[in-house]
Figure 1 (cartoon, rainbow, N blue to C red):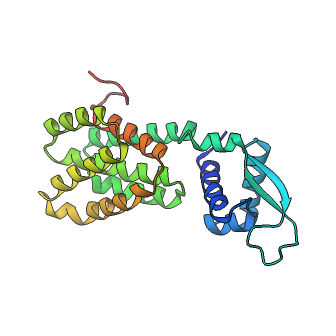
Figure 2: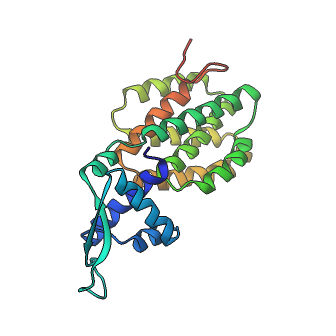
Figure 3: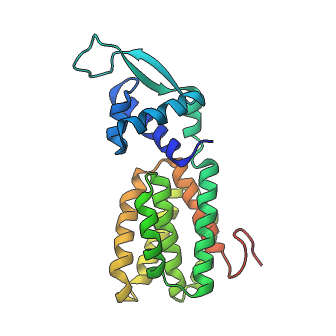
Length: 233
């Protein structure tokens, strides 16, 4: 199965290939992902066995010893195709879990600040840009439950349903959250920091990741108390 960690490995490897102009050594991947060399090596071998990567013996691009051949890895067509399908099974699992958490917080009257405390530890363990952005988006969705936004939610949902530009729709939503938070100054510092991080993260996401997040936002805004995600009255 292509887990979020393996998918993130593919994304990082693709970017390193682009930067370096060829296949990549596991030590370079380890440094970029902030993991041990042996963890990186094991990840690459797992992806190789699954057909997402191929191993080649060649001189590493930019190596100080150009005549020395090393075991390097590069994406196969299957690996490249996987990167064009953002999220996959692991994304669906995470998305449904976060939607459940938003609905449970709403049903039990928990505030966005309380949800923020719960999410902090989980966020610290995430390395995927898509997953980290989904957590931030879940908090922003939950923050709207603390203000009178019932009518505005419906209007926003209608606009997002018609939007064909994911980044535009996501940034509009963040602007709506900011406008509502300014009416509650005591909540602005904590959530304002997440808004700042959100606006920094959005330009770094791929078009496919942005589409995943826009779909998640649509479902989050459509949630009703006590109903499974995706169910409407």
